[in-house]
Image 1: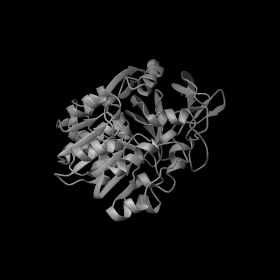
Image 2: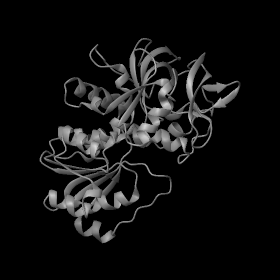
Image 3: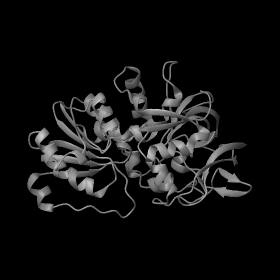
Image 4: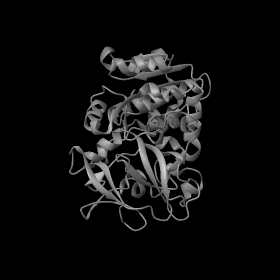
Length: 372
């Protein structure tokens, strides 16, 4: 079938909407009519080839939509179901079998390869030319996407939850919320510092509030985002340009340091700062994705003598089939108002959505691609 899709032709190129060809779903695959698609920082770093998905490519990895057709062997969903598209995984390796698909041993191939890992083919082409069309198992910057039964998550919108809103649960929102709820798992009454107040960081703020953290310090350069953080549960906000020393400021606010810290910016210097805000036996979670090969330095004795730990977190260590429906339910109950982060754009405004995301004018852009 012919569909409209936003194609990135070359490194740092634009997202140009073109007509391309999409195959029918193969065994284990699902054809989804995309209703909404979140714009994420990862789309930009792949556009700029900091992660080497082959170009030309259709990106987009926070899709939501309606199932239109299924391939042989699919039994989790059927045509007409409302779904969120999340990350892909092999469902067979040690991590997947242990309930941690975000740490799939084949994660990179399934999500950044741009092709079916099983046979190297792509469901997308243009005039006979192959286009990478399996970005995060979906390539949802398009009117339709081929996903797999693994990464299609059925959701109950119930007439009161906008389907177009839910795409960002597949990556960014899931990452921030899951990093707190699943990975760090702070106890009620504990303290946390969250570095970065984009969609991931603000999702972490909401999750920390849900978990009962009594001190939630949020650090960002944009005052508007710090104001949003305060509205969503942050007890203190810090603009590094307005204080002499971020580490000293955070430790003063929290009477000696935080129990937990979360780094969402992908900036090595920030990660180095974050670990120094921890109290004894504190834990730093790293979710921000810098260019491949980025290194950060830590004083080994500072970690050793204070019992501090650092952990990497992918996709909030989530099992999307369980965690995304939970987040939808929390939203429905008014306990996780992630809609406050979202600004909608028409599909043909994708370049403006990307620009607004990069300059900080919008926290979480969502493309409205078709009617629910």
